[in-house]
Image (cartoon, rainbow, N blue to C red; front, side):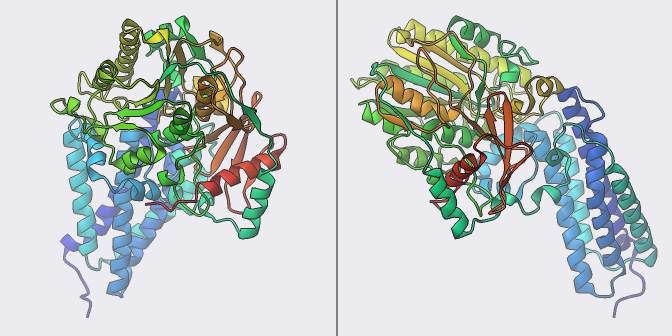
Length: 587
């Protein structure tokens, strides 16, 4: 028998949970308004839309709580309370991830990155040991207590059910009213509630066999341009810099002036005014730059596997070996994260080195177990000085220090501007160290980013660059190369293999989606590709001065707004790339 009345201590958990969910929604909305609003100079853009989207979630939670309070079925009420407790935990985690990475709580991301708790903690600890640590601890404890109390609670009073239903109705009316408030240019996925952003996605819909075969057949008709280039014997160093973005560079028209030494280095050498990342994550940037393939998620899956981007003659290591070069990869992070080390070795890099190097043994470690960027460059300089291999080399260096939440290695404080000024100094110092060694007599240094920083787009950026602002990153080329001082044509990370093959004198055939930039007359691709991070069902194609957007949705995949010229062939290429990326099953 269910007792007619529960003790007050047990009856209050439902209302406590309701208020906790409301507080988390308000905190998220104010965080977006203050932090994102300041970043974008768009005050008033975030608060109301975020509250409006969360109102639907609160309406559902309050209705479930009312049922759990009133229901005579203990087991069903317990399920309802547990679901609400999980939703509150998700709200809290979503708020923390916003603060850490300016990213939402995606279940697919959680599953993908959950295999390395050490790496995750190395990123999060900067927040939990910051000046806000007490607030984080108190908030986490409060959410845990409320969630646990709610799950263990029993039946409440009818009055509570009426209060909760009234709150649900109020939230529904507020949500309806807010649906009429324009979102301006702020993307809905950023302000949507945690349930909305995790609903089934179009990219996870599989292709039918007939549709897939038709797309593959059409893709075979794309024209190919084959080029042998000119053998130069140049040594090549490529530095992929975490979160290095065009908005941080005054030279590239950004609203921040955080890279003065890199800007000076660019003016003295060669730089690109329109260079783009193909993805929105570090591994996506490496995939594009090392393999020449866009980091597109295969149909029927929530993410890609690194193993799908396997070895080949047209990857950077494959090109290096065909030219008689050594291929090397250096980073300071743990190579166990996402199986990166094993992937790099399978690609064919002759030398792969991470934080296990004895060089970093006694140095402080930060995010992903990585020593600071200065140590990475010091280690590479040591390798260069000790190297006895007579072959020329292609070396890729991946930095870590400027990973969100942007902890300045010299102060230990979360400080985006200070972090990128640190990066600016380290990259310029590395260039100068190479110059002192005479590297540039027969070598080329390329400095670029892995992806556009995971921070909101400013209103100034968006007004100036439109949708392309989401992928603008620097590319600086210094050394023994004949090319224009300023390259104003559009290029992308996936152009690296063809460009390196060209200057090493190796045969390379390319489609209209790949360009060559290490040449006196750079030849841009006809199309630039960007897999969006704010809407992961969306692939943008840049052509001319326009942007076309393709929405992934199984056999119903289609262009939104105005399609590009020869849209069916471009769609077939996108879909064929996605199918190719499904060859290996995720680990």
